[in-house]
Amino acid sequence: MPLKAKILNPAIVGQAATMATSPQVSMKESSYDPDDVLFNAIYGVRTIELNRPEKLNSLNGSMARKILSRLKEWENSQLASVIIIGGAGPKAFCAGGDVAALAQQNASYGLKGQEASQAYFGLEYRLDHLIATYSKPYIAYMDGITMGGGVGLAVHAPIRIATERTLFAMPETTIGFFPDVGGSFFLPRLEGRIGTYLALTSERLKGVNAFYAGVATHYIDSSSLSSLTARLAEIEFKDYEDMYSRLATVAATIAEFDTGLPHDEPMLLAGELRKAIDRCFVYTEMESIIRALEDEEKNTKLPQHIRDWATNTLKTLSERSPTSLKVTLKQMELGRNWSIGEAFRNEYHMAGNFMSHPDFDSGVSARLIHKSPITPTWNPPALQDVTSKDVDEFFNHQGKFPMKLMNDRRDYKEYPFRMGLVRENEIEDVVRQGGQNAKQVIPKFFDEGGRKLGTKEKVKEVLARNCDQDGQGYLIWKGGEP
Image 1 (cartoon, rainbow, N blue to C red):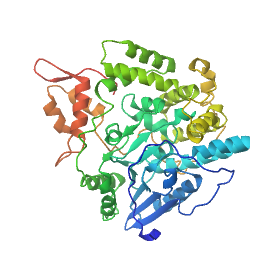
Image 2: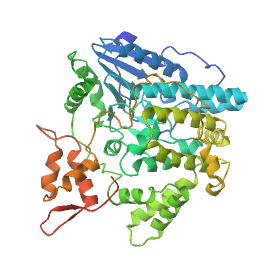
Image 3: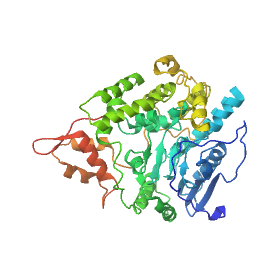
Image 4: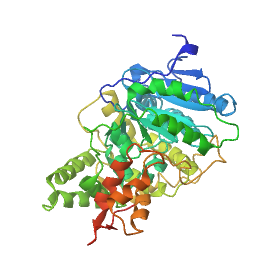
């Protein structure tokens, strides 16, 4: 099909994978593929289609440069109103950056290879930051595997659509790296300690659970994506409309394709499990997290599934790079206070340090190139061997690795456009007003004119986990980290 006639295709479900590998690596890109990313115009809509399905649409330098250039062009175009990014092929939106190529480059070219690898991260982070500060509605179709570098292309978008085929994860600690692509900003701003948990364990969220957890802002069936693209192309914004108004129009259009939530996929990070996550992952030292999980494992007063979860989580953490775990935990704590620009600048320095750290090459080689079931050889091999000085080296850069961002003047410490499900602190504020039962609280979070997808389920879970009732049946907020 000619490029000008091509409409963005939704990905088809497939088996999960974390990141793609590359068959050959050199200091220069091994081959130039003019079609590794496809662009299309449909009236006011501009589509970006990642087109490496055989590599699960893993992002390389060629693709990043093309997308970056086109986004800047569209930002200055009066004809481009809405940007949509998605992935081609049967399995993935984007399974990550092509880190196997980077590890082989490091091994083959030493210091020059490490410098070239860091340059790739600089390009990738500038692209992700541009998305995070973009001045037009940008929509990510997270249909299929969305991991690593693919997360960077999606999670900073004001509108992120999950489908029944979404598979989200940040698997970097499994390969001796850290959750980058703006993970310093995005993950700590998820509710409670969900972000820290996902960052350290690489836990996967499937389908609607990416929506429930706040990773996605909307959920629709994958079969509706093509129709949604065509419908969005019909929108004509007024010149005087600001970004908020335009996003509200886009959100209302997405709601037209609401067919409900799947009843066979309960909320995963909820109830007793969510309480356990917040209890165990609230600490700022890995050793304290490990002790908390061990206490959960031994606590016979807890439900068996929570004790089993603690056992499995301890096993998971024991297989991760000790350096990655400690660096990631500090990253999550510091990132809570970083601006979006600070997050990417600091991550650029961190990435440069990891390029010269043995865990990255060892982890990628074992997990992605040789695909060994055996845990890679980490250096240092245990948490107690990773000192505070070792960790601090990843953060005390003092301008060692400067990076210029595309939109330096657009900065913020909270995402400027609040989309998606109601937040726990909003629910808490209403409950603390007093004199209300659950039936009175829940309707307060519906949109005028009807139900907002997932609102009832989210509010009921938050109330059940955080509230008691007084003698008159009124809700009393009793706890939980907001």
